[in-house]
Structure formats: C-alpha cells, structure tokens
Length: 210
Image 1 (cartoon, rainbow, N blue to C red):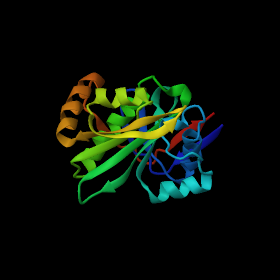
Image 2 (image 1 turned 90 degrees about the horizontal axis):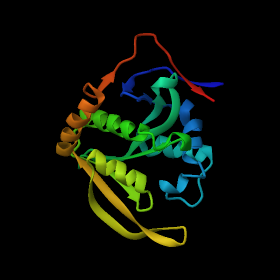
Image 3 (image 1 turned 120 degrees about the vertical axis):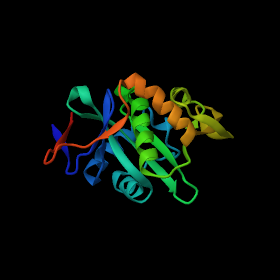
C-alpha cells in the first residue's frame, strides 16, 4: 500500500467525504483519476490526455485550489479530486471541476464534495458566482448540479463530437444568493452546518492507495 501524506492536514468534512488540500505528492493519483478511459470523455476536452509530467504543470499553473476527496468510512481512502480554476478576482467568479474513481461514482460522494467546495469558496473569497461547464451527454453531472441549485446560463450548441454526433455544452452557475439557500437546505440534510474542521495539532493525515 502506498501512502499519500499531507503535511498540513486541514480537512473540510461532510457526512460521507472529506476534502484534503492537495500538493505535488498527490499529482500521480490525480492523473490516474483524470485519465480513466471509461469516463474521461465526461469531463476532459482533450482528445489526447497528457502524460503525468505535462498534467502536473497544468495543475500548478491553472488550477487554483485542489482538494483530494476522501471517503471517511474507509480510513480516508482517496476516491477523487475537486478544484476551482480560471478564478477571476476582479469580476468575482470562478469555475469548478471534479473527477471520481469509476467505482465510486453514482453514490453521492461527488455531490457532497461539490457542496463542501462551494461552501469553502464562498466563505474564503468574495465571489458572486461559481460556474460549471458540462457536456450534454454527461446527464449524471447535469442532474447533480441542477439538484444542488445550479442554474443554466448558457448553451454552446453542438460543441463536442462524441460517439458519432455533436453535443451541446452547458454553462451552469451558482450565485452567492442561490448558494445561501442551498447551503441552508443541505445543512439540514447533513444534520449540522457545513464547516471547516481543522485537524488536531501535529496530526498527520495518511491517505491509503490500494
């Protein structure tokens, strides 16, 4: 078993999953998740997925805040990652994206990770909106973000060719006002407000990779 060690382990915790701030030690796992052939077309725009060294440079230069999603009931097993990108402090918006291991999809982990990240972003930055771009054939993600409170604000028609036809790409947004409504709604689901939970002093978080 290979361990991923985070030297500064602040965990943003929900009921099923937690978010651990990523560093360069996690880039190999992130690349593994993002390059899964079964589900990579759901989110990536590239036809050729870059090697790990090239993708690490992308993470260092483009992604703003990167978190490893861990499953709390299995000793903080990493099951995916989530981040925001193209952060614009002047116009007060950012974009978010996430990816999960194929075996851990459709179990509610990704939705909870999105709520935790949204809560953290709105508490940390003076944002007006958080955007998400989703291809039309990714019905699971479209349903998840709309249920969470995102609203469609744009449609790029016939934007992506996949499996013999062109598909739309939808731009959805969560405004600060809408997030406050959603946050209160899901605070009841979780049984307590979404919050940041600092780790105990001198405690090290070990993420086990199978």
